[in-house]
Length: 243
Image (cartoon, rainbow, N blue to C red; front, side):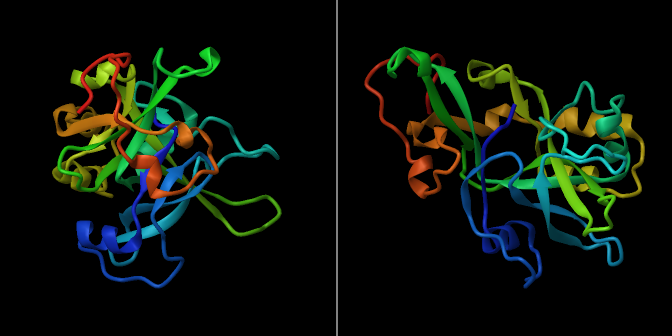
């Protein structure tokens, strides 16, 4: 799964994806992005077709939503459910996006942390070369019944963990290669099955590595570069290899 991640700033995204500069709602680097936060996503502009950055609520609200309260736990979409579940299927066919990231956090059982009730070691997972990458994302636009401003929202697609990532968690976000990003964002592709084939074939766990970080990240309000600083351990309480 993916419940917290590190989001890059405008300049980093412009360099990584060769984007033109934009002046609307510039994005700062965020070290502890949590669900319901506003995050940058990349999509093809409806008029020009060029890749653009836009803001989206992390936690998808489908266009047909009518309840007064926003849906809960819609920040991750399982690939196994994306084609059939009403929550995801329209977005999978017609509103795919990518979510830029520097890395994400996962928590693993560890006997070296006290108290006992909180013995989970946070890990920071990122590319081996420390370059930016993109999660496969789904988007939706919801219009409030009171006629307010439309809300753009998104979810990160997740899949079964593979390779050494199984030492961390049973699930992981779908990390798209550059070629897969192009295919995923193709607006002419409206077949959900074909889109899922792109997502299923893309993630390459061998390109990822992880290391332990401070439990400061457990606080959703914490926000500093210290959160991704490697924590040196002298014990071997964490399963798997720490890079």
